[in-house]
Image (cartoon, rainbow, N blue to C red):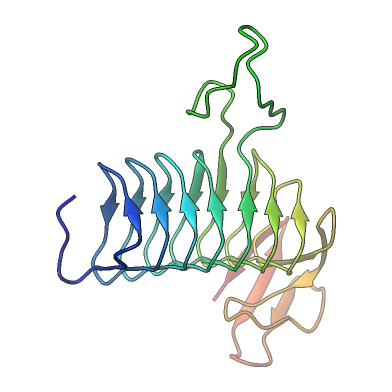
Length: 201
């Protein structure tokens, strides 16, 4: 892989063929990025993180240490994935292949499921994100949560399984009420809830 001088890659990181990394992105020690993954500009990937085949990651994304991101995951711009998060891409995993009785192939196949983390969302430390779901724009998933279903935009989610306990502003501050229109006490932005669709202005 040709490396731009504007990309910082620690000498212990392993970057496989076909990986594309945007400028001003930093890859820290003992990171492993599998083939054909695309990582945008102005990103950080923390130590000992593993990103699998064909993952798509946007710009201005922060991925902390000890994160596992498998094939089938898309992370949009301005997302934060905190330390120790694990994503899943299979609902019924087995170590063995029932047809042959041998070890199952870990390559993507027709049973690989897809998950998207939308722009501006934060996934807190130690979360587990199950397969075949979406985390909405600017949502915030609290530390240690287990996400089993899709998360609305601006939702504040906690627990196992994760449940919604409120709303958060685009700036990350918890909104003061559970109304159709809420004003952030920190940045002053208005978040409007209409028919379960969230918009900010």
